[in-house]
Each structure stands twice: as C-alpha cells, then as structure tokens.
Image 1 (cartoon, rainbow, N blue to C red):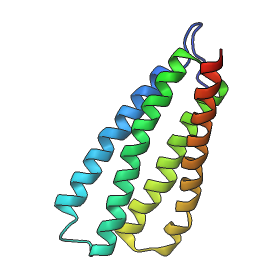
Image 2: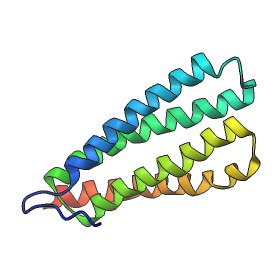
Image 3: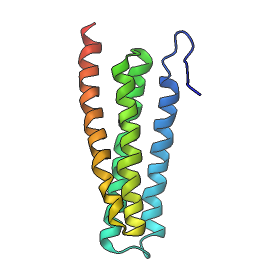
Length: 135
C-alpha cells in the first residue's frame, strides 16, 4: 500500500513522528546498553552499542529537522533526505546493535551501507536547504 498525502500535505508529519520514535528508541537503547548490557557485553561490544545508539539519536534529530523542512517545502529532494536518514538508522545502527549482541562479523559488512546513506542524506539536506532558500 502506497501512502498518498492529501492536497496540501507533504507526508512530513508522519516522518516527524518517525523521527520522534527513533529518538525515543535511541534513548531506550542507550539506557539498555548502560544498565542491562553492561554486565553482559565486553568493553568493545559495549562501545559498538554506544556508537549505534549515538548515531541513531543524531540522525533521528536530523530526520526531525529534515521532516520539518519537508512540511514547509515539499520537495522530492527533502523527501529523499528523510528516506536516507531512516535507511541509515536501520542499516548502520541496526547492524551495529546486532554486531554488539552477537559478535557476528557479517553484520559489520552492512554498516558501511548505512554510513553511506547517512552521508548521502547530509548532502541532500545541504542541497535541499540551498534550493529552498533560493526561491
């Protein structure tokens, strides 16, 4: 099923909510790592977990900013930006969470794809901001 926003809507409202949910889950993941996993993971695994939670939070906040811009300026580039940040969280943070919990190196092979999505998202956001401010 494809989402089709009503006239005057960008779909950014749902992406804003997604950003808030990802931020809340990032806080929960950080607390889970600091309190419940501290005794179960070694120092390296715990650092991987912290990296995943930190990048999830950074990009959840970036998603909220991009989605807010999208609600005011519904462009394909800003929509792409949001999609890239969401994909980055799933691929980058998700693979690091799994790597920390399992020590399975194959999960580390997914992480760079998430990092690339983050970088592409930041580039799209920069271009999107420039374009929005030109008109």
